[in-house]
Every structure is written in C-alpha cells, then in structure tokens.
Length: 399
Image (cartoon, rainbow, N blue to C red; front, side, top):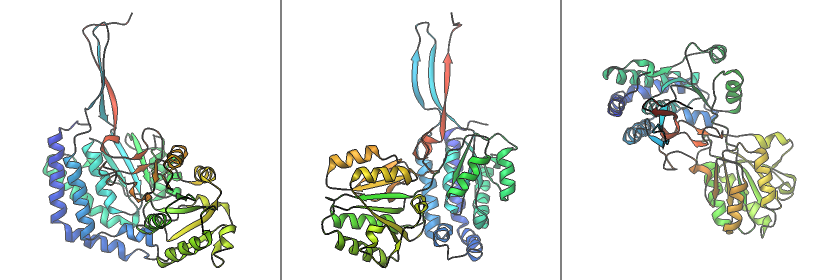
C-alpha cells in the first residue's frame, strides 16, 4: 500500500468536498429512494437514514475538519539510543485495510472513509441495504475525487453483500484485512465477532445509565435526564436507564414530576416494583433481560437504589460500557462513582449525549469503541494508526 504525502491526501479531500457540493441534489434524490422503501415506524433507524441539506452540510464540515487536522502517520512516539549507538525510534503507521460494517446512517459512509483515508488506510464499507442508494452515490463522489488526483478507487470500496455472503467473506476474505469495526446493534456485533478471522474493534451498544443521588440538584437532574433521553433517541449515547436514590427528599412528588416530564416527550416508562407503587399506571419490569437492552427508542427504565454503591453494581452488571452519569452536589462522591463505574465515558452533572468525537474535541470519529484494546472511546484520526519501530545502526550486532 502506497504511503501518501499529506498534501496529496488533502487534495483528494478538497476534491471530495467540491464534488459533494456539486452532487447535492443527486445525493438527496438517491436518499429519497432509500426512505421510500423504508418503514418510518422504526423511528430511530429512519432518523439515521435521512439525508437532507443540513446533513450534507454536516458531511462537508466533517471532511473539512479532517483535512485541517495534522497527519497522524509518521508521528514519533518515542526515541531510544543504546550505548552501542543503535538508535530506535517508534513512529505511528497505518493499519492497512479497515473493514467497517454498519447499519443505516449514510453520513457514517463519509465520516469513516475520510478518517481512514487521512490515516492512510484503505477502507471497505459494508453499509446496510436500507441505505444502498445513498451510499452508492457517496462512494461515486469519492471515486471521482480519487480519479481526479490520480489514485485508484480501491482506497474506498463499497461492499454489496447479503448476510450469507458477508459471513463467507469474514471467514475467508479475498484480501488482507487488518481490522474490522462493526458499528450497530448487538446482533450485528455478535455476528461479526463470531465469523471474523482478524481483529475486531467493537463499537458497542449504548444502554447508558444515570444515577441521581439523594443530594442532587433535582431541577438540574431533570434537565439532564430529558436531554440525555430525548435529544436523539437513535444515538448510542442516549440514556436508557434511570436510577434514583430512594433517600431523595419528597421522592413521591419527584417521581411524579419525572413521569410527567418524560411523558410530555412521549417516553414509555418501565419501572421496578417500588416505583410501581407510586406510578401505578406504568408497566412493571418483569424480566431481568430488559436491563441489558439498548432501546434506541422513546423508552426508559426507572428504578430505585439504596446508594451509589448499589447504582455502581447495577451499572457494571448491565450497561454496555459506553456512558454513565451521576447527578450529585457531592464532588468527592462523584469522583468515587466515576472511578468505579466501568464505562468508557463517565459524567458528573452532565448529559451522556456528549460522548461524541466532535463534542469531545477529537473531531470526526469512525465509531465509539467500548473495547479496551487498542483504544476505548471515539476512534478519531489518532486512533486509526498503529505503530512501527525504526532501527538505525552502523553494523551493530547483539552479543
């Protein structure tokens, strides 16, 4: 694989930006074909599928941000010079070929590909069939940009395979794949991990929790809960589980207030037996499995816990390891909670919706990793490289 100069990569990205703008109407028209064939009752997935002028503006901005960032390849990580004069330098290097498997969201096609390309990786994109027309025209735009700059189109490829064909490809790919990133629901992730023969970096489920301590600022907690739950239900950083300290003053009225606020946004509630005694008309939790679920819907579980220790235990047992939050005025308690909760992102008095590369100052992201190797959290430019050791000698031999 050719190691491209930074200015060459940026010229391709500049061409891609221009071509996206010139093909705006065609991109939206292609997306309309996908939307027409999709069931809009699946609200979360439908929202992810939509491409309008605002979404194209976001795509262009994502490419611009990546173009302006430093090249992550060839950066020195460490240097060491032995007594015999042998110099050892550790530098960043491309992975090689990354395969991305994802559902819906045509904007992911753009964001993932520009990040992979700037990090000098080839990328194979296996998008969902629900976005086939949208993804195809975006890849066509990519190929025009590559052609204009004298590069092969195999830098960015769209794979069109059935589930059976994808399974066979994962088991026996016709080309070397260095890393696979599945970005979607639990079934997709399990499918990829079962069949892949190369490293898999999991962009895991959300199933995010918030714990409201008994000395939390209630008005602040309510504001944060509503934002985390309702701002974008299709996002992996959306809230699913709400744990309230049963020592909260005036607990009954606070539960009723929470119920009313969530119902105004049409959020369906599922509650534990204790909460059921107060919110009598709500559905009760009947099966432990619901605690493991990522809803991606206007739905939330509400339950009571005795203290932060019980909340931590529950979160570490059931959450997807993505994001969790604590609402409390006790900073020492918050620090302890954040250190003990096993999630990639932990919050004190803030919405989980900030677990996003752009919001975190990282820029665009290929995915949010819930794995611990080689990286946890947003996979931005700096995370799409590996490393290589360079030895500079003058005839040294080991004795």
